[in-house]
Length: 120
Image (cartoon, rainbow, N blue to C red):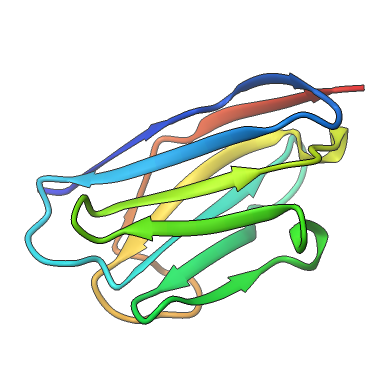
């Protein structure tokens, strides 16, 4: 049974930074696709960034140049470094992983979500 352990959310002022992490605990083998989605109140869940084995990445246009997704395969962990945060980045951020190389939902596993709040 794979459990996704997320950390790093919180409250930050606009212009600040946060780093999210997500570890696929209890997994057997590498999770080829790891990434982050977010859902703001009243909105649909949307892609933030994903990274696929071989270090192919995909970002939402709204975060390009501000967010960086990376991974540590030895720890089955994915990171999201978020800089120059804006109030519109406020959302619950969900980790998503899949054993295969996939470019969108569905994913094998989803995290519980971590709240990111950016104050103006």
